[in-house]
Length: 406
Image (cartoon, rainbow, N blue to C red; front, side, top):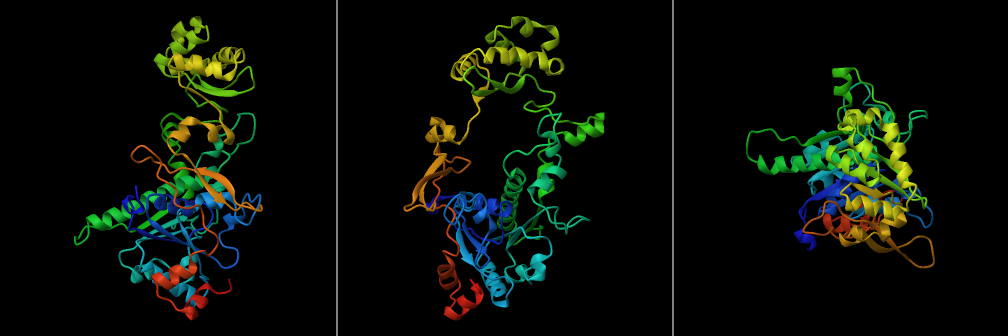
């Protein structure tokens, strides 16, 4: 598949975002062929360049989130930088941003100005609490959104403070919604062109609402039954047996034996037909009531065998299970390799020579394999000259004015 064959080839995106949320949306659009022009501030660029930086001058986190993009430097606090954004907007289909609400407006780059520059542009805005409402002006990162969206209260052990998932999941979920919103806007723009039907080209994604949308029946259960969900560690409330279990060699597995038909087979594997045939354990409700007893029986079995043998027996019985992987396990896994889900690039890591580094592949798969990543996150301002000169026709003076004190 060539670049021109990708689904979003011909779409151009202007990304004004920092950190993870809006850049994740840009990454998703870029993965499938959109040309994504990422605007970064002079000198330091996106702060993500320094997050988890173990060597060199650009983190692997930045390289990952900002793959398949071009980086330009503009000073948005200046009139020349503002004019450059408006000129770029005239050439783009989508604008992504995740500044605090009101920031673009103060710079003279609000929705009305962008719409005047390009009446067909789709504006996607990501913020902590949305562009409207009493909390709209508050700052907030994913940690706050995960807490206020209901997720944090459900993660961790019941007798310990709420925990985190280990990644900025709230940002990533918001980024998915932002990319989806961009696609809706583009779809409506094309299908409703020349008609009187409305086109929704201003997309408003709030981090806390994105998290809330993933909370399944948290609110309906509370309002319908008065249920207050609580933290249950590695389990999922109301579903059993489903947990992580330690094996004889110190490895761990996750086993999801909670389907009614699966449960009986699972109990046969661990030699507990008495539990498999008990009348009160034939449904999830009954199994949840006896979850501690079930987990003790299951772990007594897993601790008697090495991880690979545990998994082999469960696979033979058709019981869903898998090892708990770390990064090294993922890199060595043949399933990920077969679908191109780890893709390698030579990258500067601060050593004498570039290192061969694997990066996550593109999801979803098209035609049987992950779409090839075209480039990892670029160096700061790597494409400034080309974009401003080639796309906008700027001369030396205008380039220097737009870039500012870089």
